[in-house]
Image 1 (tube, rainbow, N blue to C red):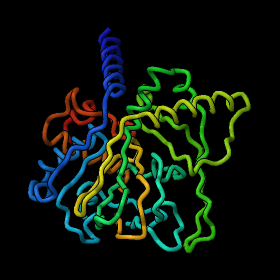
Image 2 (tube, rainbow, N blue to C red):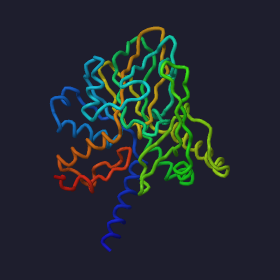
Image 3 (cartoon, one colour):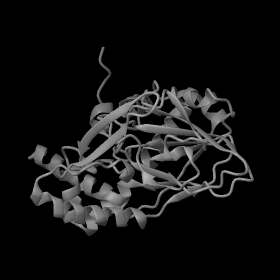
Image 4 (cartoon, rainbow, N blue to C red):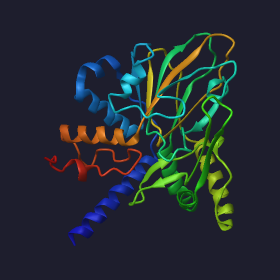
Length: 317
């Protein structure tokens, strides 16, 4: 009976979490870089708790030096290498190899869906954003909130997108470091208790659908429903200033940008990634240390997270 009661309580808590997310609007808690650096683990705990709760944070006053984005990332864990290097620059180039290196608008998406283990966190440090640059605002949409609204409003579409795998492809053999990668996964990832733990959405990198014929029609119906839900979702929009740094959960937050002019001025962001497991590890250690692993602690970190059950255990000797 006690086990059944505990399971019922967990199911009720999950349902409450889903309802809260479905009705939520995105937020961008702000922190001062100097206070984060001076505050040690206590400040890191506040910052990462906000990042876990809201999916994104903004750091202000980060010196505009190229190594700073890696320095901030390493407060959480080691950098996650990927095809663009340990760190990368987002700015327009004369001969771009990626849409990000132009002034074109970029729709909401997550990065590197074609990886088996896509990055968990993304950091984008604004190095330059000249006044002469028109447009270029950054956009963030809470994919978990979108997913939970879809589960509530169109459960058949939700179930299809949690079951039928999409195909994500990166085929760019004509670059200095050739890349040919592909991975199949559903757009919506659920854990064993059917909690939403990942939203995989990147239309420019979708390849041919490889599923049973009976799934093709339902998949595209559900795909259109999710696309419409994302298009209509509330968003955080911000014109970054030099010294500001976005840090967001790449498994949860869909990011994009408005188009901007490239003839006058420079828009330059410097970025890197951190593995989702390093994020979960740091969050769990800080939860345990600061003894607040309670029901209010966010459990949606972008992968399976045991939350209270894990951090309440005594440390192993």
